Amino acid sequence: MKITRLTTYRLPPRWMFLKIETDEGVCGWGEPVIEGRARSVEAAVQELGDYLIGQDPARINDLWQVMYRGGFYRGGPILMSAIAGIDQALWDIKGKTLGVPVWQLLGGQVRDRMKAYSWVGGDRPAEVIAGIETLRAIGIDTFKLNGCAEMSLIDNSRAVDEAVNTVAQIREVFGNQIEFGLDFHGRVSAPMAKILIKELEPYRPLFIEEPVLAEQAEYYSRLAAQTHLPIAAGERMYSRFEFKRVLAAGGLAIVQPDLSHAGGITECVKIAAMAEAYDVGLAPHCPLGPLALAACLQVDFVSHNAVFQEQSMGIHYNQGAELLDYVVNKADFAMHTGSFAPLMKPGLGVEIDEALVIERSRDAPDWRNPLWRHADGAVAEW
Ligand SMILES: [Mg+2]
Image (cartoon, rainbow, N blue to C red):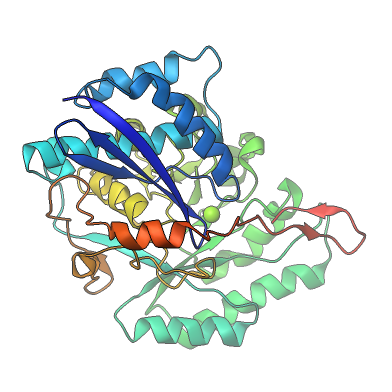
């Protein structure tokens, strides 16, 4: 079998799908994208395609090494996201060729169902509480919300009170009947993270995500030393080689590699295994589309340390399309009591509505990262 063509489709809300075709009629789909830089990743996919066309898609391990080591300069969000989507599509082809789901090819299930959590948006406590109530009605009991708005390097007690007040109200309304993680989104400086984590401790969030930016990863172990709350991070780390450093340094309780940013299934299975050796949980990052989610689930079902799966149903970023819009087999993604079942169809387990993908790709918006500024006009982390 030989790869004959790579076709990319940029799509609403902020996604990109990749179709890899072969000379035997089997095709695979993947989701190579970095949010806000889809066109850059698209160019990287096409560059990598120069080598891939004419190659045997079954040699995933070798093709991965060529895409990574075959470039003197490697790593980073653009290239690793391009590799990730290509890798997903190659696994899809392999599964479809052999007639089994990818998790079978990775050794089979370690669990029967995979716990997921849902994002809750809203700027005011009442909105967040209403959002949780709506999702609870459909059986979801685990959530994630942003821990705070923009925060200055040294901010005032009003900003701290605002963040703490939302969380306090959630616990007051729901008691211990729900769980929630708090995402600081890299918005918080190391000095403010210390204060916020201490103030939030009494409300027992499930974890604190990206308490500081990945660029300041040296603080993860220091922050972990002063709190009992689990610290999570990893959506802005792109390979084993980056996860190696944070795992060795200690402090993280949960790693969150993104299957569409960190080299795909091939790389993330290895990251999961590295984390298991450190007694660190796995919670793949996934605010993206159905192919990215399917790739995450393949890894979750073969990784003993997988604890939660993020998913983007109803997420505030999904403007113009929802998670399952381009999926034919929507029922396979149905959650029961807040968990996913393993996808049973061959490959990634996603049947793509190709006609709709082609149609919607014609007027795909160029989604951009919101640009925030502090009160004094300086750029703020979003
Ligand atoms: Mg996050």
